[in-house]
Structures are given as structure tokens and as C-alpha cells.
Length: 139
Length: 133
Image (tube, rainbow over all chains, first blue to last red; front, side, top):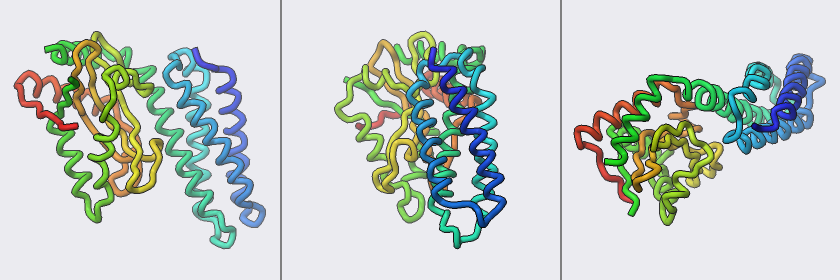
């Protein structure tokens, strides 16, 4: 069992912040690289925390925060696209690249949690394949 | 002594990476070698990025750095391998980069099944190839 409640609250907070960033990014003149840098730092911390807890996350844990995590990732995808359209004069391209990296890291860990921790253990075909592979590895 | 083996798909993927133009991924083989040199079988089995454990087999996704392009483990390569909990046998199934022109974001469950089926077919036919570490 991982720190489910703490992760859920953190993901929810970051989802709200990312959404507000999307709104701010529309108002091009009022958006600054320092705002995005702070968000990036917290997104990376979330990734590290999820990665550290990955081995102990259960299906029940993922049920608590998985939906919100997927929502955060969708919001980040939109934010990346909004930031890529901002004028170069805002000098935000470096932070936009970091945002894209964080989006990709969170997408991967979300995929791994949903696919490997939740779906695969129930997949009969996979279980059969692993059982056959197990016998062959001993040969 | 730990025995490292490969399936056909893995060899094709690694060759494509290493031979990619301008040598973008030419360090892939070195990263594999470096990750498994002087490493015990228990370290190979105890990887936190485990995908699945079933009977005596472990399916693992290992994060490898890409020193050539100055990329960390998070941004480097992903190596998918099968390892026995009893025998000292490791089978490399797939490798893909997280960055660059051959970038792959993740691996689907269907791809994992295809790789396992390929391992089963090739192990049964006795056509797996040894991988020198």
C-alpha cells in the first residue's frame, strides 16, 4: 500500500494549477517563465514520488488516484501545446521543453501503473505465456 | 555463470538503433554491457521496474541511461528482459529509446505478449542466440 491519499491530493492540486496555467498562457502578455519553472519543479517531484512508490502501488491505490492522474496528463498535453504557441519574446522555450519532458515521464509511469500493476496480473493470456516462459527458462 | 540470450526481435531492434544515421543511438550496446557487467543475478532479478512475476519467471523493464547523448535513466533507453528466479538465465526481449527519431513512449501489453510468444517459439526451437556481456 503506497501513500495513496497524499498522492491523490498532490495530483489534484497539480491538476488545478496546470489548468490555471493553461488559462494564463492564453493571456500571452501575463505569462512568465518563472511560473512555468515552479510548476515543472513540482511535476518532476510528483514523477519521482510515483516512481519511488511504483513497486508498492496496488490496484486499489491506483483506483483512488489513477483518474485524476490521467486528467492531469491530459491537461499537461494541452498546456504543452499552448506554451509552444507562445511568442519567442517570452523566452519560455526551455521551460516548455521541460514541461514536455515531465508530460512524457508522467505519461509513461501512468501507463505502467495501469497496464502492468492493474491490467496484466488479471490477463489470462499473459499468465499462460509467463507460465510457459517460466518452464523454458529452467530448461 | 549468468547466461544472457536474445530473441530475433531484440537483435533487430538493437541493430536498427546502433546503425541509425549519424550514430544517434550508437551507445546502446555499451549501455547494456555496462548495466550487466559485474552484476549479480539477484540484482538482475530485484529490479523495481518489474512488469510481472509469474511462476518462476520475472518480466522486467530496465531504465538505462544514454551517456552518449547525456541523457539520464529517465530519458535514456528501456530494456525489456525476462529472468528466471531459479536458473541464472536472462533473455533480452526488446530495447527502445525514450528520445530522438526512434522514440517510443511505452510498450503495450500486446507487444509484451508478442515478445513472450516469440521467446517461447524460439526457445522451443532452440534458436535463441547468446549475448556476450
